Length: 428
Image (cartoon, helix red, strand yellow):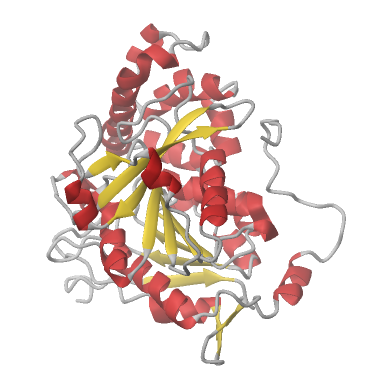
């Protein structure tokens, strides 16, 4: 009966002694208790009664809430992966409507002038959200805007780090984004920290962006400047999820083919630059049907991996969970046909007191559609972020941090270090 009424079951996986959070009122709470109090019950559209129907609902056209952006192009200083990437900063409706529409950019997006961008610096204490979109998406995605729309009127600042080549951005090196391309978000957050030294910074990642964000937070460890981070519909173990897609008809012929098709469109937009890599041949790329094909003939050789499996294993973020040292919330649906339940690192969440995993038994991939078309996960993320900023003293050190760290590392050797890649890179 509960299912017929649209009630989904919500579960939490966490360390037996989660980190304490310093509240502004002086009361005591733990990360797990805080998350459970912030996240609303999961009520979904009973007509979309499984993960496939929920996920396929995303294919329907939906205008979504209007968000206006100003775009800035950043130049990467990385010695191995130079090039450019676009960051879209949320601006007010008034500022956005005053700007002349640019047909080379997504809707409601224009470029900053040089003077506008150089004048952004501020000592204000406005909370700021950094967003990372999913595979081949961008700042225009409805699921991303549904989170920004309620936050911006409450006074939040926000920006979206677009993957290289996404959201009609151009690339100046033969590299698209990949699942562990943490250098662009790292550069963006460094810029934000320098430009807005007093702003508390938060981050949310969706699907592939959640995988990148999880890796970034794990790589940063104790040095991470974010006050909290959220990963939504993270595929976690990319190899497991890839195999899960391949073993069913819907997985292969619907989801894998659709994602492969989206990557083909990106390739066509940037073909002249991508084929400058001698390891990439146009004939092989055009023969790709599925996402695995594209990863085999484009992503793996582009980034220096011998196979797509090696790429998946190196880029997966499941191991990063144990390295996270800031309050971290993950949201996954166990019926997600893309970010498969078999890939969710439940055991790792039980090992790290800084993390909590919220799973629902229903919701699909970046879906969780409710009656009326809104998405439950957007409400959950907004509630968690606003409650965190309103009630938690994010400027104070985390109580019990030293004790939590001591429990996580009981002996010096052997040491498991999830920050290390198999792909060896210089520091910058």
